Length: 461
Image (cartoon, rainbow, N blue to C red):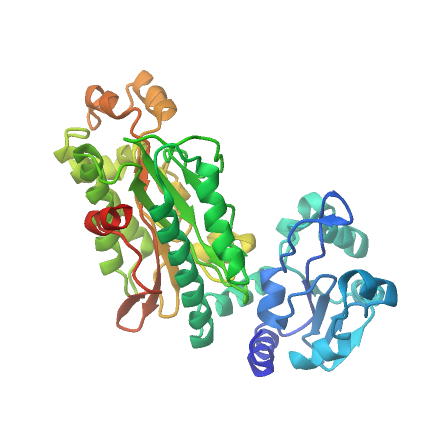
């Protein structure tokens, strides 16, 4: 939690941007895994956290943009609650910490929203993702759950994005903490991996480090010898020499800011020459993309530059052929690089994605591509000072995708399918860092994480 002045300033700006009506910001409640009292790890809503800063279940808030009044809704604990969960600050104490003067019991929230709607006042809300909040909106505003996303307030969405997109100095401090914990996680996994060890042991090690730093993982750990599956959460394989391990995981620190780091390393102590060739193509794509980051440059342009580096490198190895610029323009590279180069990161690992990727990642001048692979680019708009984003190119050999494309003879003028056969069991390589866009360029957040072939092999040794 930051100082109260931080949240007051954020809410005051929100009131300027939303000139009339009620602004409804839902907090999250505990969710039962298999019954109500056995809950998942609690995670507060990021937008509620940004404007009210309280990481506790059972809260929501309203800001009256006409009167300026701010009300925190929630209930003080009963003595029965205290027996089970211990003492908590009172609602009045929580409100004081973040500069809010008024509190009310949670039950009064529905009355306030229903009265506002009956009086013809606009109620601004963000796209809901928790079913409990969808049911509340359906009851309070008579908006069916299926249509609530489209009925969410575009003005409020844009106002929230206009603040959250630009990270303040105090936010950067927290994000660097998250990257540094992520660094410890990755280095520990690189050192511990060996033939005969199960992937689950390494995934557990990464999560244990995050938890030991009073946080958690920012998203479920991706760690697999089958790195060609982009979001591979299966950890049941036993590692063998000659394989690669792709680890994509990051810490969520106590302040709930996220790190998102990917590294790929050999199960053996050193890369094979074949692995090293592919690895260095990905590394060049990542490092050259980072070097290109600065205000005013569309990230979509940098993504396409990374795709050309990958295509050129694969052409040098005989896996691609023909005019590389045309191949990338038509999307042939996506057989090997079928995702976007990166995304915003902050309180969410895919920051603000619940507000709509096109609102967050695109602009009036930069539109999302419809090409396979490039269409998955979550951030394409012009970069601005204060953005924090990931840079994460990769090369993957996905047998199922190769088979489909080859059967259709797709892009045969650009892809050497005979050569690709030699890489069907290769897996995948991805390398990822978190970058702040500065006034004159960029800065990689956190301490350096082993990345070059030599650095990785030194840790493996």
